[in-house]
Amino acid sequence: MKLFRTTAGCFVEEDGRYFAIDGGGWDWLLVHDDLEGYLRTVTAGAASQDGFKTAEVLAPIVNQEVWAAGVTYYRSRGARMEEAKDAGGGDFYDRVYSAERPELFFKSTANRTVGTGGKVRIRRDASWNVPEPELTLVVNATGRIVGYTIGNDMSSRDIEGENPLYLPQAKVYDGSCALGPWDPGDVEPVAAVD
Image (cartoon, rainbow, N blue to C red; front, side, top):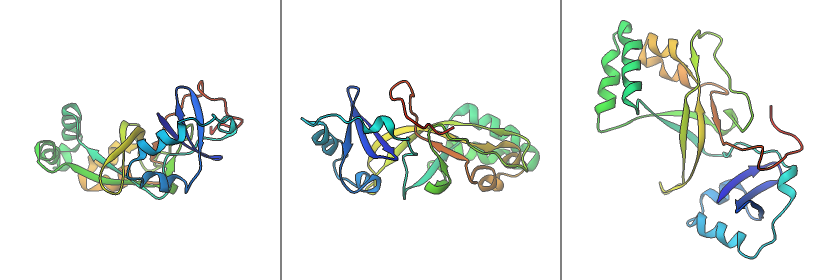
């Protein structure tokens, strides 16, 4: 099952058929106690909709926040240590990699998040900007994982390497976060986001 937020409302896809979701919208869906069960009731016996085909797919976020976990791969640990060693912060990354508490940081609000097909941004004051593809978990208010999507965490490596305390400047800015894959072969929208 796939859940979409579009300009025509929310839709659920199952077996290549799309069903409109009547109700309170994206935020209402994500606080559902049993989201999967609810979506199954939407698709059970209902007629599929064509309205989705004329809709523009939006980022799967309205009032939620995006938080990220850093230094999750051994290879990433080594690269961050090398980048920050001249600034005296090389061992910070070794410590966080092996620590019991993960490195979590605030990444984005909904209005600063780019959706499917949108353009991520880079900082003008940075010379080394990299996209970081991420698995993105959708977590409800009780801490339960209710879904997942793909994310893009844009980072300014030279700013973070200059001083690990500059992490917010290197990672948190307008358009530095993209969420929500969409295969244009599945649905042909009238207007796609470029």
